[in-house]
Picture 1: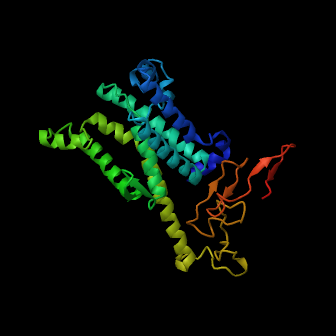
Picture 2: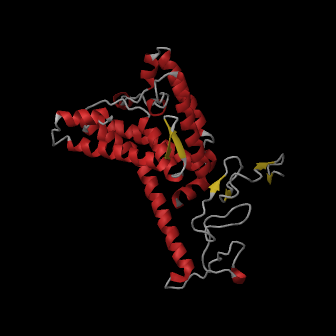
Picture 3: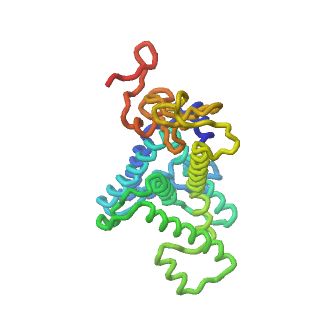
Length: 321
């Protein structure tokens, strides 16, 4: 995420901390409007591509004022808590800025999908926040694959298995949707797909393909990061035939036994212990949303460190523990 790291240094101060809290509140407001019968208000805020193209640009933002479910209040509370939880975890993992970028890019892609569907297929598809929330869950599953979720409050499932099911669902939606342009599926097949929540059509395929692009991009960034980590480990094991970097402790080493690679400059450094990405290529470094300024921390200290704030003179100072 080198590009985002550079962008964060320039624009990180504009990030909205605890963004998922505000989104959850927006969902709750939409739910209240729905049960109050204020359908006209919800319609005026919904994602309507035709009306956006006719000047009602506020819909680009206000469409998130939709409840993720119209079920009974207890189920809504559980759903809202779940999305708030995974959003908060992602923000703690990535930092507020990167989480903002991920969520808002998902919103923008939803708007693009709705406009593309309207312009190409002539269908004014009123898209919900379904794929927006699904992209959040998929990112959470990629970051926390072995965390356990109780399906139906009883059956324990690791998040990665639920993510595989969701990925298969999205893939079927896209592939069958575009195939339906040239192929007429038998009624029995369509019935089975419909019972699974999949309705093969090019509009649904386009909605799924574009709306999930933020996760697809994120997935390949993570994949590239892991490959880079493996290459760095190979270099540190002496498998770098060029021999440009030299690892292995000694006088030039550090407390973690990694090496300060000769000629290499770390991109990330923990503000508490000094650990860098050269010490361990697989280490995760995050910015703290509670600290003023751009302060990075390793996984050991991101949740346990004295915060930085400005004193009465405007100088940055770290709290005493």
